[in-house]
Image 1: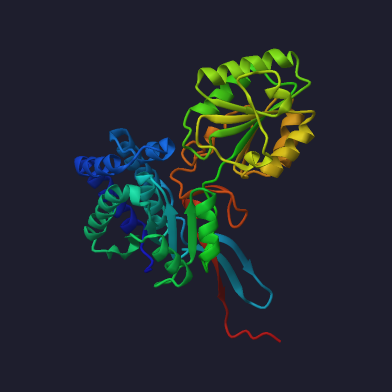
Image 2: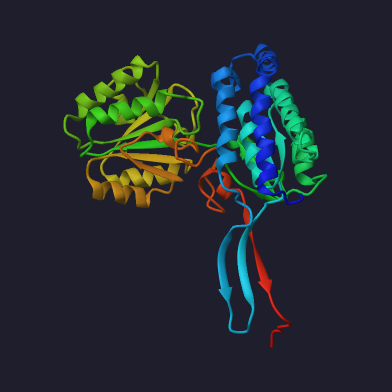
Amino acid sequence: MKLLNTTTKNNVLQSMMRILDTHREELLEANQKDLDAFTKEDQAMYDRLVVDNKKIDGMIEAVRQVASQKDPVGKVISEKHLDNGLEILNKTSPFGTIMIIYESRPDVTIEAAVLAFKANSKILLKGGKEAIHSNKVLVSFWHKALSEHNLEHDYIKLLTLNREQTQAFLKEPTEPLDLIVPRGGERLIAFVKEHAICAVLVSGRGNNFLYVDTEADWTMSLEVIKNAKTDKISACNALDKILINESIDGFEDKLQELTTLLKSQNVTILGDKSVASKFDEVEEIKDKSIWYEEFLALKCCIATVKSTEEAISKINTYSGGHSSTIMTNNKETGLSFMEQVDSAAVYQNASTRFTDGGAMGVGAELAISTDKLHHRGPLGLEQLVTNKYYVFGNGQVRV
């Protein structure tokens, strides 16, 4: 796509904020059509589908934040002047065309598009059929904002493809495609990886762990667990697995407090043998494969470990590489845990719910990447670029 200057891009975003605000009813009516058609069998997906005035305010704020951020394109990463006279600049540059595949969340239609547009990339939005009415209206808003500044609509495009058509598009794209971001569960990620012929950046899978060390503040631990597990079960940063050091003081009493707390929040509890044998309300884990699962539900697993090293090993074996927390007042233990756990975000004495662009000060995010190339964690505006070398010479040849 043609490189746009920062002023032009920000003017489009200002228009988009106004359109979102003044066309609220149109969006709410479209979203109600989506909600009426949804069966509610998947409560987490339904929660993500809902658009209300608070959600619209959040969309406007996401656009405002991106408009206020510096343009990520054309920044000098490094500059070298070689003995042979060559001047070499390494600068940020747009990806080109990005495709994002996501389910249910209409706000992604705003966040993904605003980030891609400010980063001067084209975005192909493949939202789920459950949000089709909401997404069509939101993309029409984008096209109005682009038209107001005499720009083509091609910068932001909604794809309404079924599964077979999506598969065909991934295998043989009908237009240049530089990056695909599947924002969803294991099945979606596997589907995209199997069929795509360009780079794929994995996002959206949680399965997050929290470990309670022997030197943890127990009252604090309960509060963090409650927030991480129950605050928003549909989020990929929600807690799924709890590990407790069996040498913690008052071990059985603390387990009782934990199970009582979770039950009061209507959380279904699964436990390893040592936990399940102590409490009738805890179902014993029979199949180890459950440790790989992301629940997106009021459900969690509790297990005991003998050491921090065992906790680290278990997390690195089973987690989705998203977010992991240690509860401890020992700074050395906390730092060792954080250094050795292989997750995009690691915490000491805090909820996993903070793994979010806005909560981490990144601003709007395209996704939360669990890949190691090219970036891990919230993928914000600064991370939505690649790089290019500019080499200036005066006739040099290599000998």
